[in-house]
Length: 239
Image 1 (tube, rainbow, N blue to C red):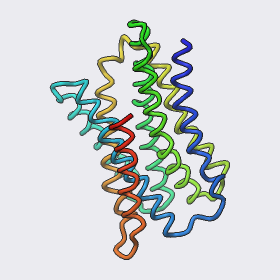
Image 2 (cartoon, rainbow, N blue to C red):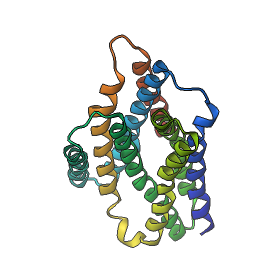
Image 3 (cartoon, rainbow, N blue to C red):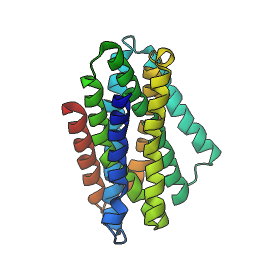
């Protein structure tokens, strides 16, 4: 049980570190920086969807059928949300949608850590679980920086931005505990959850985030996409 607390504590601390960004950068975010942050978030989420969600899902599901079907389901979920909100371009709706997707993608990440610890208990080897927790925790930092910054751009309230970003990250240890307790039932379903989260993220990034970031006269958004993608790619491949 102590390893479960350690591993879940690592991912929660990392999310919290990123969430305090509005307190560190206490000036009002200007337009170009806002474009960079939006691009950075897009790059981070796109890389996370590929290397943190879809690649591990295909490694678990060798046939790939479950991952492909769940990926399509994830896309359809976001399309349904679009239909319900009548494809509104209101900034509040846009930020809320991004918040929903980031929070939803935290669910399988937390479950992975919980499952890794449970498997480690059966093998009496927790090295893999600790490495997974560190890798997910490190990638949570740029994700929560991007999320808390977007929230702050919307509400201009540091405490509220931190609180909601913190809540989004708190989903991970919560579902990590659930997965740990229900490991016998969920071990064969984790690939499905990963595929759904990957579908949600890629659809939102391509349909909403990148189009809202890329502008012909502004390079900052494009640079942000590349920087975010590269940082996340390096973390996911080498950690």
